[in-house]
View 1 (spheres, one colour):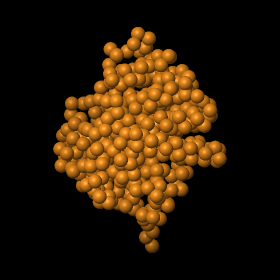
View 2 (cartoon, helix red, strand yellow):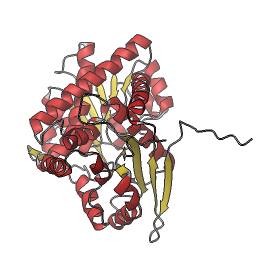
View 3 (cartoon, one colour):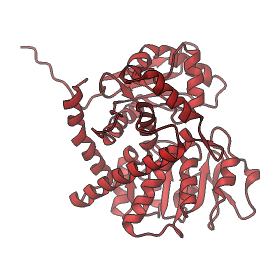
Length: 399
């Protein structure tokens, strides 16, 4: 008798794409569908692999589940992710992006809602999507909206909001990361003044996180970009550095003050700081370089920056890793809170809602970790595992 088994841990769908012009490879992984739709950004970086994209897609499934609130208008979607193995600075990168989106058009139209991620800005994704013949990179969710026209106007209005010269869409994710850090500090009774932070990556997530932490009273003592690490033990002028960065998050060194020092790119790891915020590439902290870390907390603003084996070694040394599935989930949630109508296209409302949601989520995660004697990551995964069957019971399994 033929017996068929279903692997619940396997992604629902994995696609590999080869660009016929350059030979570049791209991937789409749909981990899970809820109401027939999955959510997850598109990244572009050299070396991006199918395994990396699959891990990111699984992370998106958990991020969506962690923000499930049966009383809100936003109903979590499934998890998905796209990736292209290409340097976003390469001359051919934009054309590769357009061809990738054109190839993935049937999936973006029906099941996959996407947006910016590592190496790509939302403006660039939107422009390439239009050139590829798409109505919107999030059009798959439109059939789930009560009033599509009003929802689209609300989201467009939110993307038009700027705060001190930076778009709300760029800032809200960093607000969530910063609030995660502040929640951990509050629980430990650590005052904000005198607490030092080192940030790896000064693009969308890293730059916004640095701004919110600096404005909360913490000292950002090191910032790393592709040119190296900028450091000042007395604290960097975050606003000046933000004003001097390009679209890729690289800071113009002409903006540095006399006391600011230029160090090697990996110097952020060993910065004298209580908090490290890896906000750039995946797999940044491994079993070797983790030995250089003296911080008490690592807040994963990037996706999968700390390797599992490294996290075990860090935990043994008393270093707490606040996991990506919680810490950087605010951007994705803000998209849907806005589109579904839980919040308006307003910066104050967006920040307040994000802060409340992140504080509650981080609190639940740390409470569970303490009660079960486990890591924050294991606790977060446990929370997601509790919620996924509830979502499936309400909306059905799409696996």
